[in-house]
Image (tube, rainbow, N blue to C red; front, top):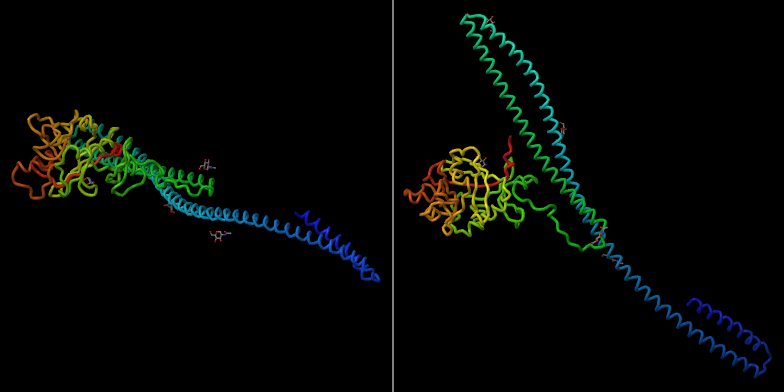
Length: 468
Ligand SMILES: *[C@@H]1O[C@H](CO)[C@@H](O)[C@H](O)[C@H]1NC(C)=O
Ligand SMILES: *[C@@H]1O[C@H](CO)[C@@H](O)[C@H](O)[C@H]1NC(C)=O
Ligand SMILES: *[C@@H]1O[C@H](CO)[C@@H](O)[C@H](O)[C@H]1NC(C)=O
Ligand SMILES: *[C@@H]1O[C@H](CO)[C@@H](O)[C@H](O)[C@H]1NC(C)=O
Ligand SMILES: *[C@@H]1O[C@H](CO)[C@@H](O)[C@H](O)[C@H]1NC(C)=O
């Protein structure tokens, strides 16, 4: 384009230069008409050439302008795309910044906690040192005392006087008592240290869990920022940093300390909602609660299998779910009962619950002998006791359907010594025994015909009990 422009300009300049001398000559010459005419013709030709050139120039300019327009459009489109990318990147970096802040706050919390832990550990170490010191001095004192006792005993043997002998003996007795008291104190202190250590261990587990959570969320963030704005519309799953807890105790170890409804996912099973009773020692998964008679427990097999009631009130979690939580074994069952004088009692038993193919048989291994209290459920279940309802009579009494005779569903044996799923009677209970026997009872606590006020059954891994 430039080249043609230059050529045009040059040729125009040449033509103009050629035309002027003729006109000059024409004007200065004394006037040959023919000559003048020739000059005029020549001028017309030149004008033609110029006009032609101008036309070409105009054409060229127009092409140039069109081309430039297209290029401008291209550039503005590119600019727009670029602008969008920049805006998206801005948004993304803002989001990342917010996340980073949250992470920082969490890390700071963690550091605080670690600091506290270190402090507690240091205190504990100091205490242990003190204890050891005390032990040493105690040891010294003890050996001195022993020497004294020895010499006293020898003295008593050597001297037959009954009076001094008796006195020395009573001295020896009091020394022995003192020693025993000291020993008890030491044991007590050791026990307290052990409890502290246990708490520390739990804290450690929680901190490790939190740390791994932070680690994984940090990795996620890094991944996102390195891939960055190129794909800003990807939706990712949040709030599920690690897999779901398999029971309430695992939730406890992850730092949950407030009792209430949580979602858990037992191994190889669907997620379920449960009520978790969080205590100082761990998390219990509640499987049954009776407290006011608001839910009818006189239900059939399918209801007992699936569960019924309301997790915030009275409910039966369901045999299927209980089995899925405890199927790997190593679980304990805790039962809390209360009577109408608000006396309470707790029963704790290790147990296994079979699946549907065993009719959800309850098995309670007999370690030593059952206490009187435990025997109401334990004794009949040592070799496995299937569950029964009206419509599935699996009890051990051949001429009676215990579930129908009493009420609700339970591990009935020869109808048995307990039924925590019986009818709920307000106080005072009915006078007739044949009615009262359908109530909630635990024979070896308040007797066969005492309808209890409340019952809570909950389960947890046996490690929760590891206190020795
Ligand atoms: C770039 O985007 C911003 C907001 O999205 C807008 O205000 C601005 O005018 C845009 N600029 C261009 C050159 O498109
Ligand atoms: C640890 O103890 C020191 C002194 O006893 C105290 O200044 C500090 O605040 C404590 N740290 C934590 C995290 O409690
Ligand atoms: C034991 O009896 C002997 C003789 O009566 C007496 O000399 C000694 O002091 C007594 N020991 C103590 C510890 O009282
Ligand atoms: C970015 O994401 C794509 C898929 O979304 C992935 O294939 C690629 O490895 C990622 N690049 C980096 C650097 O993470
Ligand atoms: C069960 O009983 C124990 C001991 O009496 C008590 O500490 C605990 O709070 C009770 N738990 C529930 C859920 O009633």
